[in-house]
Each structure stands twice: as C-alpha cells, then as structure tokens.
Length: 251
Ligand code: NDP
Image 1 (cartoon, rainbow, N blue to C red):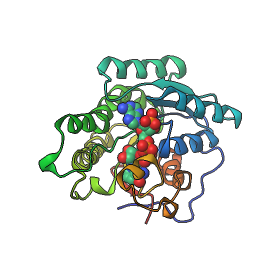
Image 2 (cartoon, protein in one colour):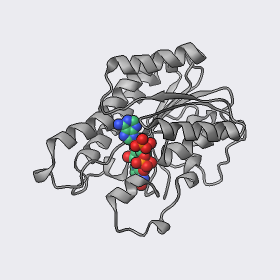
Image 3 (cartoon, helix red, strand yellow):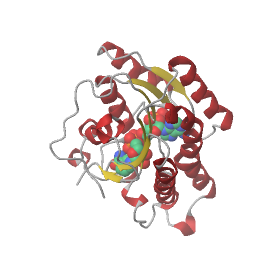
Image 4 (tube, rainbow, N blue to C red):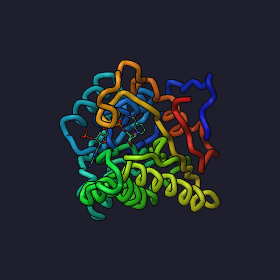
C-alpha cells in the first residue's frame, strides 16, 4: 500500500490552471476535497445529485476567491450513457480541457449478510459505485488523454481490498473499482500522460460512516478536511509518473 511522504506540503498554487471534475462534491469527503482543490487554484466541476448542496459549495468557493466552479447535476443511480457524454461535452465546451477526475461519490447500500441481501439494493450500489465510475471515466478519457498531465483517481475502501462480513455490494463494488484502477493504469501507462491510482480515505466522519457504524463515537474520527492532502498530491503535478498504486489516507 502506498502513502504520501509525511512531510508533504501542497504549494498554494499546486492546481492552478487545472480543470478537475469531482463526483459527490456536495458533501462529506468530496466536499472537503473540492474546497481544497479550489483553494489550491483548480477550477472544479462539481458533480452530484443534490443541487442545493452543490450550490452551497459553489458559493463557498466563490466567497473564498477561488476560480469560479461549474455545477453538473447528475444522479448516478439513474444516469445513462447520454448523460455521461453530456457531462464530458459540457466540460469540453466550457473549458476545452480536463486535467483531473476524482470518482468520490458512493453509497453504502445495506449492511447485511449475502444470504439476505436485497437484489434491488445490490444493483443500485453496483450502478452508483462501479458502473457509473466506468461510464464517466469512459466519457472523459478522450479529454484526459489530451491533457499534458492528467490524474484519474478512484475512491476505494478497506473492504475493497479485503472483503468482510455484511459489507455485501459495497465491498464488491470497491473491489471492482480497484480492478478498474489496475486495468486503466495498465492501458494508459505506455502511450498516454494519464496516471491512474486508487485512494482509501479510511475511517472518516461523514454521513456514510455514521450509517455504517450508527453507535460509534464520531468524535474519535478524523474530519474530511483533515485528509485532503493525499488527494491534492495525487491530483496535482507532484504525483506525475505515479500510476497503478493504491494509496491510504490514514495509517
Ligand atoms: P457521504 O455519504 O458523506 O457522501 C457521498 C457523496 O456521494 C455525497 O455527496 C452524495 O450526494 C454523493 N452521491 C451518493 N449517491 C449519489 C448518486 N446517486 N449520484 C450522485 N452523487 C451521489 O460519503 P463519504 O464522504 O464518506 O464517502 C466518499 C467516498 O469515500 C465514497 O466513495 C466512500 O465509499 C468512500 N469511503 C468513505 C469512508 C468513510 O469512512 N467515510 C471510508 C472508506 C471509503 P448527496 O449528498 O446528494 O447524497
């Protein structure tokens, strides 16, 4: 497992001039990483399903003096190929470039043994956490390949690397995300300037964590804004040449 140098510091203008698309940008870890990217100079495209949350992040970026972001509302549970093409086309027409894509949006599904796992929930989790990740990647790859230094970053989980009882479709979806990371890293390594890595945020104080562990004392958990550094490193130029690696945010 890879991790960033303990003394890594992100330059204030680390992401200046870059356009970065982030899914699930309205809440939790995605929101924190989006604000951090904007604070380091990126123009961020905020993709998510709850427009009010995306607008709140948008306003916060503008109020802080960041580059004006863009909002792409999309419910990944119901999106079809045309929707992904539309997102890619909108970015192309507005900016003419894409330098980073962070797949962060995800759902937990049920915490239940496989024997009782609901089939509809299974399909929804795989659709949001894996099929949408594949489809958005596919739609955005042409633009990423045109960038001089592009980063494609997938969000994994501890249970995407070792399965555990009751994590069902979520765990399987994250194993799929790890496979996608390996496959794309291999496919892009030779002839492109796209690097592809996965990141596991570790236990983080968000709605998803609360849903998975309702009785946990959340004050013991790290806040999303305190794990953004590895994301900045992997989305920015300091990770140039690093591809096909699995990163952990927390030891
Ligand atoms: P949250 O539930 O706090 O946030 C998830 C984000 O994904 C929200 O912005 C949510 O939008 C968005 N989202 C969910 N479903 C859809 C959909 N159908 N279409 C579009 N957007 C959607 O989760 P976290 O911040 O905790 O998780 C972020 C990532 O980190 C996930 O991939 C998760 O699996 C991973 N992770 C988290 C850990 C943790 O401890 N928190 C540990 C390991 C991995 P909305 O707010 O509108 O619902």
